[in-house]
Length: 316
Image (cartoon, rainbow, N blue to C red; front, side):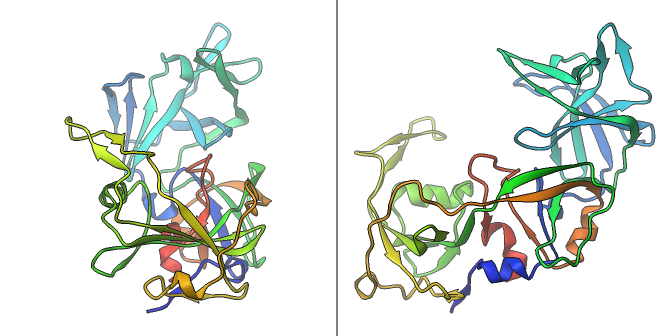
């Protein structure tokens, strides 16, 4: 069976391309806010089911999206505004750090917050804190086909659009699975070499290229604790690169044959990435999913995020 690829033509036909710390499909209505401690062993200090009194104070835009809220009017203590910094979200539950934690203390003069060890960030502070809406969240959006016009834009930012057309792990029983390294079951197979091949297709400065990694050889072994891994031998497998037709739109990883394709030598660090301007909006994610939409994981994964089949399987 042929697999459609994440081509530029597919992206250009989208109503909206969005980016956030989660996909819109992982952002249902918030039913509860938890206030937690800043520690390795997370401790819930407060739980709130009534969200009507919460306000959004500002947002940290460096790297990922990190909003700051308060319950009622924010408390000003000396030179600081005591907010609550976003910690994480598990679907209907959002967690925020206690207002007494340093990362929640906002310097009133310039919106700066200090994280410790010389690290900090300056927030985008809103002139008037606005009500927290349990149906809304923060997303960066742009409209490739121009049909979606964002309203009430809070900020703009350029995000790289690295395009991974497809990525598959071909298993020993001849199945091609959309690969993602953070999928534990697949990464275990990858480490142990219990697969036939790993195939990645990129739109790069060299054109459309396919990276082929042959399995069968373990590169990691599980440690006695059963959770961590240690390298075996060199700790990696050689990757071969092949050129593909520029106009390719479908591909069958099960029938790819190295001997029937031209191997190429790639120049290092020549991935074809481009910064495009996105608008930050506070919106109901369900509105996005009613459109023809795509997801760029650059905000979710600032160092390695991309536009890939894995995060856009709804398009196929």
